[in-house]
Length: 119
Image (cartoon, rainbow, N blue to C red; front, side, top):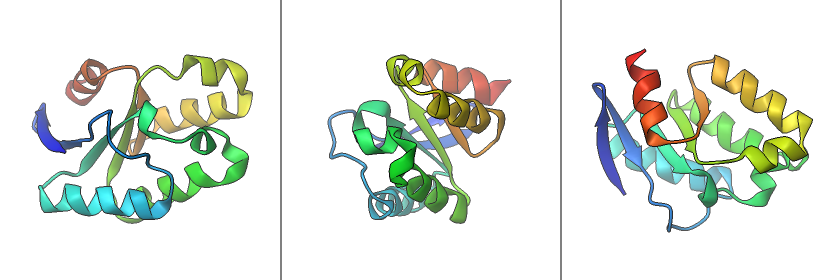
């Protein structure tokens, strides 16, 4: 795990090859690591999230997102999730609404994060 500066925002960047983020406890671990490193934002590659995260009916996404909201930390999921969005109108709606806010973002790349933080 490392931190990177994106337009003055310190971001904890999780590597793609780490363990899956499957529970709210996993999310809390990342939040704590981010806090220890002075990051208010945690970037998780989409491939680190389990299939259950993207199946909203399981409640996994809700539990993970709620943990970030409770601790007032931004969660950024980075990667291509277009196939998942094409397969689920509910997930598409969730992602669209999340991206309108300030706390949870789904972005294609780290470069998109940098652009969003400067804009």
